[in-house]
Length: 224
Ligand SMILES: [Zn+2]
Picture 1: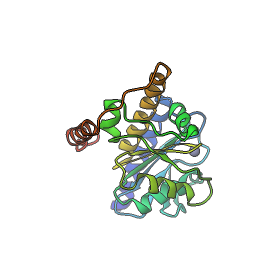
Picture 2: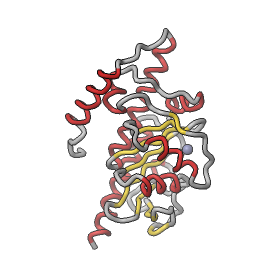
Picture 3: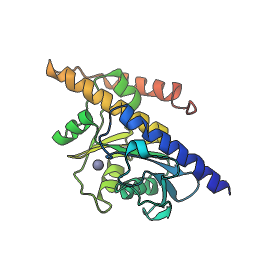
């Protein structure tokens, strides 16, 4: 009973958060998804495959186990479910995962280039550069493995998967969506900055202090 009311609440949250993807111009058509871990259970809530953003409702969200097997829902889960599930299985601190092909961040991933820490906002949210993960094909564990190998022990909640797009993680789904929005924003700004010259790096001590301050001042704030 407690689990089912928790799932009902997460279905609503995850459905609502999907609206942020087109609102922030992170996605086209149906490519992009948000998921949330069901706390205390080996379950996650995710978007069904091939459903347009304006057709998403709490009711058509699907629930899977951490192997990506459908547990609850009428539609099949997103084709990216295996990657999300792998992250939850191997990073117990993660409560939310987002995947997009947002344009500027994905352009960096196409070059296999990390986004350097040249803005205070990057230091705040990402604690340093936004790293690149390996090239991986969809269909098995390799995307999930690449995300976990890159982000485990890293401050950044975002990884640019080479030639593919962005995966972000957070303590909950909302934090992962925020990281996806911020990742695209800084990818665009640093790209524009580079058109006119070489952006100036921020010293490591300043990066550390910005990160520590931001994580303490804002990191503990309850989700609004
Ligand atoms: Zn993708």
